[in-house]
Image (cartoon, rainbow, N blue to C red; front, side):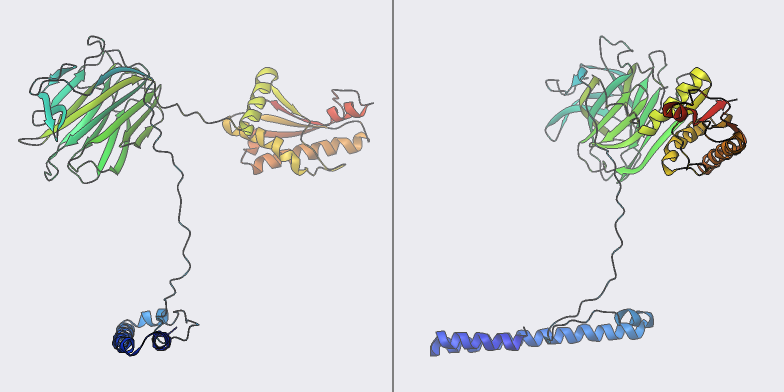
Length: 442
């Protein structure tokens, strides 16, 4: 509805309901509405003029502007909308990154409450540099002096160095207050074997406090390594967290037998599937920068237990491949009656592909395995028919396996006809057992 039509209706309503005094007020309303309508028209003209100038200066854009949708509304003050084209579907990524669960048995816990400010925290030992109990923003915590490289370790079980084991979690909060200082302050969480000297680690997590978005690194020992040096494995999450903001942030580590997972504020940023076990003890380090550089630490918890170890769920095809493996290990061959053909032909029925698929999967897992693929028939019909038919059927199976990615060099088709029955051909059940395909490992 345009402004003029709306104004007319309003005038009629108010004239019926009001007297002369109301009509005066209505006149003032009319003047304001007319002014508003004029401003709307002027704005529309101004926008259209700007658009025309843009088209003249950018010829390529004229074709785009001609594609603007036309309104079915005849109102003069309606602004035509531009057609932007059909939106492409957004790419969605399914990922679980907040799966951290603290271990069920707490071995060490320190919230620093009750400690005397200015003293060294009683539940820790100092390996390098300086640290003391402090308060920041009313929170009691451990102040770690970065300028000299502060290295501390929790006192667990009277200071022994083999308390971690193969399944554990570590949690702590950290804050770096100098958010406007761009010098290099970093923090490390080092996990050591009990026999390792200071300065080496089984694996370590490190990150820096001098970028607006922080990258997290994990250097770890591969399971195949002879020693416990973390030089072999590397994982890095780039610009994955914002911790350079003068606030407390929560860090968490989970190690389960072989899997390293590290979290910043509940979000998993490191996920290493295979690392060497043998963790004994840990240290936390803060270092770097010049002058008054302090990282604050609190709420440290070490617990036995970890995030559940990921194991791929066994699928149907896995179970079937396992059946092939078992048969070959026990008998040297895999025999199946589930590869079916059309009567009197070498044409595979569609339902046969499931059985052929599991043989293909076995061969992919064992690329050096070689098989004689034997086709067998029952005794219905003459040898002159059954012998070549069984050869053709064996060749059809080999071709199907080749189509699934198997190397035909490792497959030799052989037709056995009805000459090697495994059951009585006088019964339907016996003949069904004799119609088979055998994969004989060579």
